[in-house]
Amino acid sequence: MNNHVIKASNFIDGKWDEFSNNTITNVNPATLEPVSTINISTVEDVNRAVESSKRAFKEWSSFPAPKRGDILYKIAEELKKRKQELSELMTLEMGKVITESEGEIQEAIDMAYYMGGEGRRLSGEVVPSELPNKMAMAIREPLGVIGAISAFNFPVAVPSWKIFPSLIVGNTVVWKPSPNTSGIAAEFVKCMVDAGLPKGVINLVVGGEDKVGEALVSHPDISLISFTGSTHVGQKVYQACAANHKQVSLELGGKNAIMVLEDADLPLAARAIAWGAFGTTGQRCTSTSRIIVQKSVLEELTPLLLEEVAQLKIGNGINHDVNVGPLINKEALKRVEQYVELAKKDGVPIHYGGNKIGEEGYYFEPTVIGPVSPSSAFATEEIFGPILSIITVDTFDEAIEVNNSVDFGLSSAIFTRDLNKAMKAVRKVDTGIVYINHSTSGAEIQMPFGGTKHTGNGKREAGQAALDTFSEWKTIYIDYSGDLQRAQIDVDFA
Ligand code: NAD
Image (cartoon, rainbow, N blue to C red; front, side, top):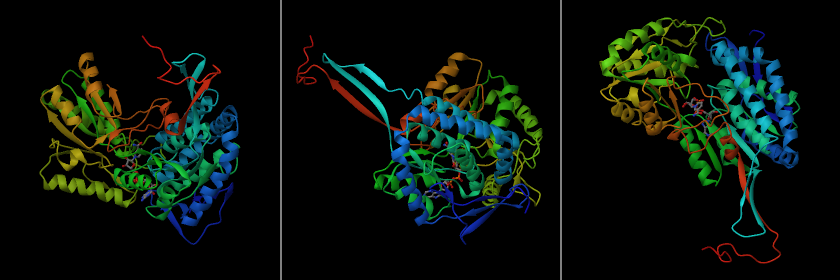
């Protein structure tokens, strides 16, 4: 064990619990050395956490929003102070390369400042009434206790999209991070506590594919579940929330494509594809996992792309010159190997990579395969690893059709110099996010984030849209006429 070993136990009602006998150890995916010890919570712990959040809600929700905002600013300052240390811990526990870990902590800092500012806005609506001497307005109310469940791949940034908007509108939160990254989650909670977040406003419980997440989802005192994870688990969460009449925000899987048209800046497209496909080792919900290329430029694009891929340095992400780190665990490595086996079996050409690297660490080469059929497993299933599939098309219309032919709907991108085509693509793609002349990744916190179809349920978690997800509208009518005025009836329209 080195001195970076991190620990995560329950944080309930302002206190860290003692460790129980039920713990798991996470290894550093780059070295396989033990890196964090995680205490697996019980259903009883979930109940205590929800109780604590419920108690804290009364005071926190009546605290003026600008004061809640002040605390979010302090959280941002605390994260800034600890940015380097937190980034290193994230890389050790999750394997993400250090520059991306730094970017991720920065994203949480940005979100804390952005939502802190909302403390002095939280805009509502004031609109004209159809009757004289009457006002109509709508204000935001908090929902109550939010259950936040998050995935391993963005262990701090994505939770910050859930926690900070929740807090600014006056909710309290019980958070269950992925067991793979609960160590860094605990460190993130420490920052919030050190910044002065009152007891019970944030509670942390820890668990895997087990009773902890399920207990949170079915708890009657939780008003909304904000879930980020796979579509498969998200569907179970969706059903359980419906059964308990609970609101839910789902941020699920993706199968994102970059379309490359024949008039594109091909060297730029090649760089963007390599970044989109192999950044975070292909483990982003927005990773580029398909490229849809017009046949006439395939021959020119392929060598440019392979040249970019060949320049990527693979290794332990703690070193600043590394571009691609390991996969999260053995299962992820196995899944990627199985897709390559299938490609070999199906006779799909492998242009680059295709192999596991070394015995120490869960490394896999950036892999480029294709052309594949748009309906094949490679082109329709979320692989969540460093495999990029090439699909060829004849026309712009066909590119759009293939882009939209998958069950997922998170992010699309198009490379073209033709503004008319770019704008037509923007309107025709059925994803929640679309980029022109950029890869499918690169979200900024002040914009709505989320997807269509099997990627979500219509909610968004970032920007102003997050305020809608984590609050409830309350409509207020004030009639100061001194008379009974009936809407629609006592109105004299021409
Ligand atoms: P996962 O679905 O395996 O786990 C996500 C979370 O759900 C974890 O905390 C897990 O412990 C918990 N969980 C598991 N079973 C549960 C149950 N029955 N009830 C409640 N909670 C349960 O996902 P993962 O492997 O950690 O992350 C990868 C997935 O997340 C990918 O599909 C990726 O696309 C998706 N993701 C989506 C977004 C987005 O914003 N759309 C962002 C990041 C990741």
